[in-house]
Structure formats: structure tokens, C-alpha cells
Amino acid sequence: MLPNLPKLPERELELARVLLVDDDLTSRLALKAVLEAGGYFVDSAASAAEAVGKLDERQYELVLSDLQMESPEAGLKVLAHARLMDYKPATAILTTYQNRQPDTKRSFLIEPEALPELLSKVADLISQRAARIVERQLRHA
Image (cartoon, rainbow, N blue to C red; front, side, top):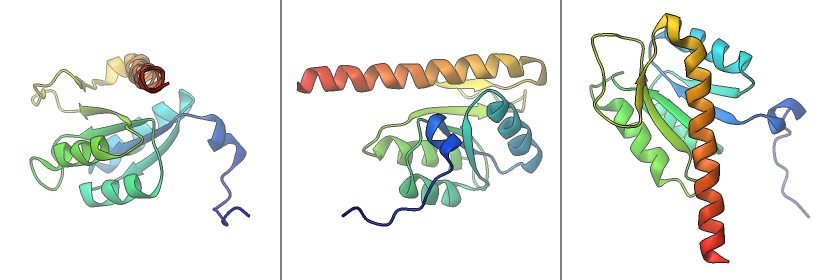
């Protein structure tokens, strides 16, 4: 007998799940709307602590986190926690502020005119994660 798990809406089961972490309400709502319009199920968190709790509760294909929230390293803490998860979500830092460009290869600046490019980058990150999973499965087979 299977345990009683919460029933998910059918549409959610079909969509790649993205955890969006940003303490700025306007940015979070705008990015969530863009990602949902792009065909993703988006869960959002307003702090590192909330994001860590969500990572422990469900699986995500991608975790997008703002770099600076309640502390300068809050976003890095979220991504470090995500990378420790058994299901290994893809991770990326994002920022909507032009004066703050994180210096990592898995980061990107979100400018208002570049929102369509966001969907392409998200799709690439999720595809790369899927490829890593298949490679891992082939190595263990």
C-alpha cells in the first residue's frame, strides 16, 4: 500500500519544476510570471531559509536564486544546499541588478529586455541536468 501523498494538480506533474528564490517581491513575481508563461511549474521563496525548507520538501529540476537577500551570501547558501540534494537539481544565480554581476560560470544577469533569453537559459540548464542524470545512469548500468 502506498503512503498517502498530497495529490498534485495534473498540470504540475507535466511541467519541469523550478524553485525561484528572490527577496524582492516585484522581481520574484515578474520572473515567476515569465517562467510560468514559458511552461514551467514555479515555486517561489522569499528567503534562504524558506528555500531550504522547500528543497527538503519536494524535488526541483532547477533552482534559481538571487545572490544577495537577507545576507550577502544567502543565495550561495541556497545553491550549496540544493547541490547536496540526492536528486541534484540544476542551479544558477540570477540578479536583476545591473551593478552586481556575479563572477561564476552558472550565473546570468536578468535585464528587462532579456526576459525571452531567460527561458532559453532555463531550458538549457534543465536539459544539461537531464543529460547528467542519463550519463550517471549509464555509468552505473
